[in-house]
Amino acid sequence: MLIAILTPANIGIYPMGKKNRKKKQEEPAPTKKNLKPLIVKIGIATIALIVVFFFILNNCTDESSEMHYYKFKKEGELTITDSIANPIIKIDIEIADNDYERSLGLMNRQSMEELQGMLFIFPDERFQSFWMMNTLFSLDMIFINSNKEIVTIHKNTIPLSEQS
Image (cartoon, rainbow, N blue to C red; front, side, top):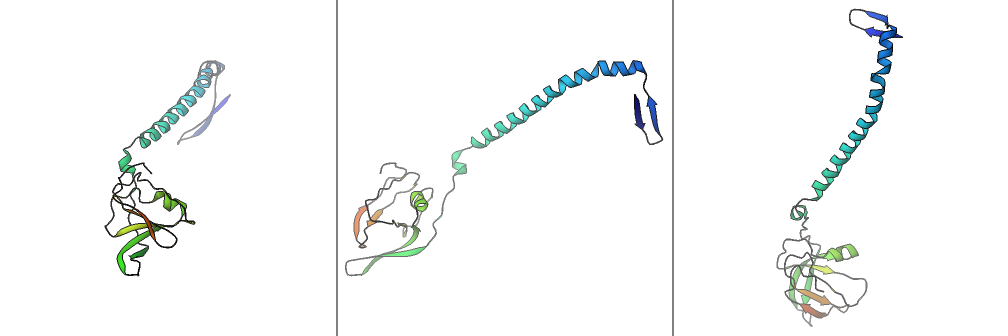
């Protein structure tokens, strides 16, 4: 067996004796072979545990710090009039005209001004039901039919209620 040793001063090839060759082949080789798979398995297990603990710690944070609060975005104005078209009140509105916006509604908002509201537009006229889940402040709900007539008013709803 030949070993090449590289040094800055010279490059040489040195033969190893038979005694040294047998010792190297008999002792270290089996030890390294047996330990290598074990070290790899321990390394993989350690990395897996670190990843698991990382995800557990990230998901165990305080929910209030992760809460995303929505802010009012004026998308129009709604004027409520009396039966002879005299204006009674004008409200700045945000419009909920798709399933996602209607299901989100006014949840996760810290507050709204007095003359602000959300107009829920449905594709067809039928009985509608709302709840106050994750709604942090009381609301007045005004139900208007397709003839633009007020049919029901629910005043001062209970915040955070799951009652329909």
